[in-house]
Amino acid sequence: MSIAENLHKIKSSLPKSVKLVAVTKTQPIEKLLEVYAAGHKIFGENKVQEMLDKYELLPQDIEWHLIGHLQSNKVKFIAPFVSLIHSVDSLKILQEINKQAQTNNRIIECLLQIYIAEEETKFGFDFNETEQLLHSEELKLLKNIKIVGLMGMATNTSDQDQIRKEFQSLNTFFKKLQSSYSSIQTLSMGMSSDYTIAIENGSTLIRVGSSIFGDRN
Ligand SMILES: *Cc1c(COP(=O)(O)O)cnc(C)c1O
Image (cartoon, rainbow, N blue to C red; front, top):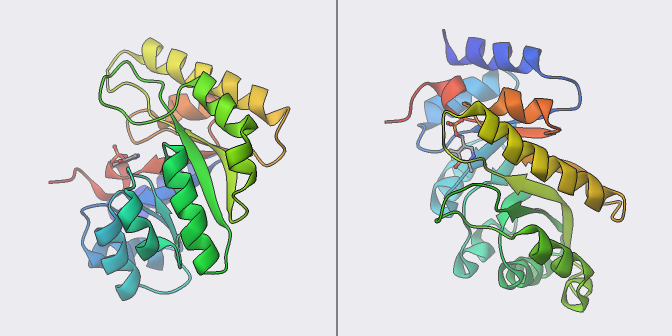
């Protein structure tokens, strides 16, 4: 099937409450334009330089989401235009995002990346750290960022029960936070291999690449 057909098939299967980020990393501009021409305007990239290059070549009404680990020295490049940063994993990076948002006279929406996988190398906060951060005085000082939700990645495994357990635990935590923080609205979970399970467990934003574009080289 074509990119437009893949996109349509996925979008038409989603509940109304779930939005799609088309993950465009490693894909050439022509393919991004195919997605755009099919009417989809929310794109996700995991690297700052690649996002910048594509941002400059593509129409201005695209919403750009950063989904990969962000380094402090790169924040200034995306601060003028980024719509949502999914991958906030430290107070330090939040402080830098706040500073660059202030310079650009805007408020940047962020998700806190939560560590739910049984893997050593993943970035993110655990549940305790997240609650401490949300309560902290340091966070109250940051007027140019808004934490609008959480992001998580399940373990890269074929064990569906484990994936379900991980998404369930993040959803339970998300709901708990929602009862105290009215700004927490978005739960970014699910990629090509596991977005159906993610949606069954409360995801409001899925990040899908290969099911739209085919396998990355
Ligand atoms: C690459 C990537 C995705 C999309 O992965 P697919 O398996 O191609 O759907 C989603 N989230 C993050 C953080 C990624 O880096």
